[in-house]
Image (cartoon, rainbow, N blue to C red; front, side, top):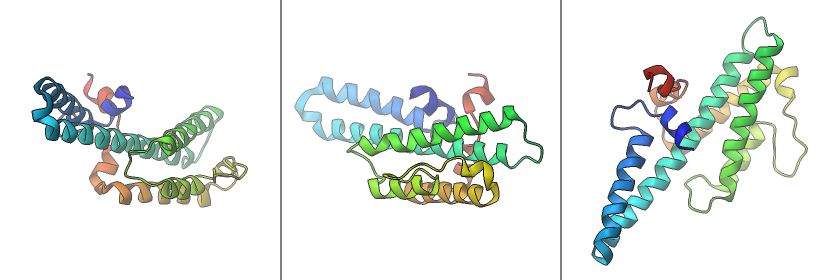
Length: 173
């Protein structure tokens, strides 16, 4: 997960990876300090979990943006379709994986609503291939899923735009 978290971090000192790293340092110091530092320990744990969850949501958004970009092309070839479907399955997996996490901001109901937009409604047969047979309708639903995650986590429009990039590759780090 650290690899995915780093991809969403612009390396400007304010990103998910940077915040998690500094929170682990704070946690380590608090644990060494003993019971006098329980507040700092708890704050560090909260920051780690919060940034981890937000980075997971950002990665889900990144993959959905990739699906939209690839399937919006005018001349799709098998490679583009394959790549889009890979990105789609990654988005589903990252989002669905949070259903088993107890300590999270997003509710299971919100996850289910978003997965339903993505054609994998819980308890029902997936209809993921609809994205290929009805791309206009389905890509609109992917935009709605992105907007839903943006609202839940309070991401700005600029952050959502930045999530399109793999900052590790962009910055050669």
